[in-house]
Length: 205
Ligand code: GAR
Image (tube, rainbow, N blue to C red; front, side, top):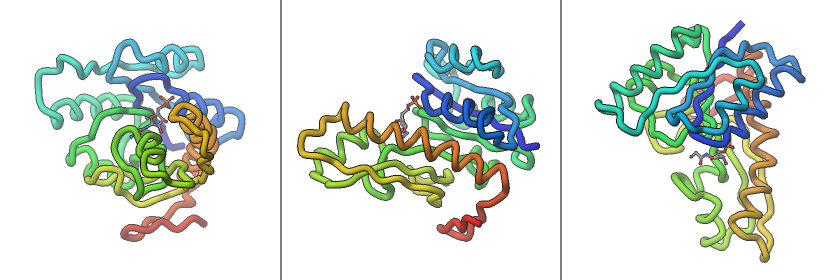
C-alpha cells in the first residue's frame, strides 16, 4: 500500500477531512505522517487524536536555505516510507513554497489544494482576490505541484457561486466545504492509480 505524508502549517481541516475519509471510505493508502513547519499548528493536535504520527520541522528560525529545509522534510517523509516510489505527499494549507529539488524528486507525487479555480487567483488570499475582481464564480482546485506557483496539472475542481452579499469569510466557508469534499476524492483516485498525467493534462479513469 502507498504511504501518505501530509504537510500542514495551521488549522489542518483539509488534513482532517483526508484522514477521516481514509478510514470511513476505505481509501487504500496508509496515513504515515503529518509534518508541520509550525509547532503550534492546530492540525497537529487533530492528527495525534486520529492516531497519526506527527513531526515538526520548524521553519521560523531555520538556518539554511529552502533546499536545505526541504531536505529535512524529505528525509522525514522517507523515514515514514513516503518515498517517491511508494508515497503521496499532500500539501494541506502548507504555507511554504517548496524547492525545485523537492518537486523534481517527487514528480507528480505531490498534490496541493488551492482555494480558487486555477489558473485564476493563484498565490495568497485567493478568496479576496475573487471578490475584489468581481468574479461570479470561484471554487477550489486540487492539482499536482510543479515548479511554478499553483501551475501544475489539475486533478479535480469544484465551483461555488459568489453572491452579492458574500464576504471573504462567507466565501471561504463555502469554498472550504468543497475542499473537504474533493481533496479526499483526489487522494482516493491517486491511491487507486486512476490518474494519468500527460504534459499539462490529467486523465481520470
Ligand atoms: C485552505 O483553504 C487551503 O485551500 C488554503 O489554506 C487553507 C488551509 O486550511 N491553501 C492555500 O491557500 C495554499 N495556497 P486548513 O489548514 O484548514 O486545511
